[in-house]
Length: 225
Image 1 (tube, rainbow, N blue to C red):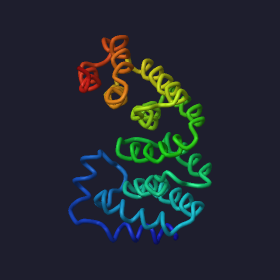
Image 2: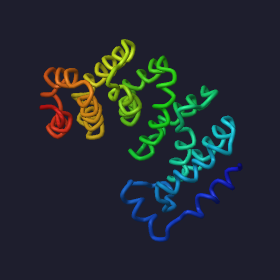
Image 3: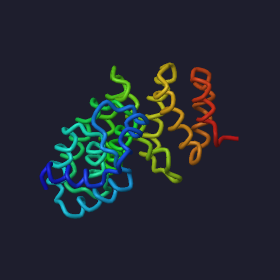
Image 4: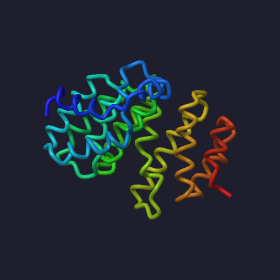
């Protein structure tokens, strides 16, 4: 499938009058077509079924480079799949996108794709750790969003607990960051963790909660008694 064919398929899903609303909500300066997310889901599901892994990676790269909002979402969705073999090229492409992040919707869709690749090969977390010291806020935030699967295990293996503690260590370096999105990401990680590992979440808040913004501290403790 060529880029032109993919963009034509996306444009066929445009809902008149939706683009301006979406551009305002997502604070986008790039072109926004006005396509609902479920429609992009259905389209990219078909692409994943029809295309080989190398072709998916190539199309995802081309869609990303178009710099159209929905095309970037579609690029991420093309790579959001648990079974993706081989996946080294997909992981490399996902990493290459991180410095381009400039809005939560695009960043979160890419991180969802990245989560699958991390769970498949947890040693890749070494690369993610380098993001935590980036000057780019969205890159720092991505380090927490992409590791959210480690908040959700009810019966984590010892190596998973090591990763859980490692990411909590990153979060501890974030608590003084005044940026709303960073504070929100820390709260998100802790809130999800508290449902499965309340002791660790509570210990983090006991140690670092006073340094967090009040809204983030409150959200992080939402499910803690």
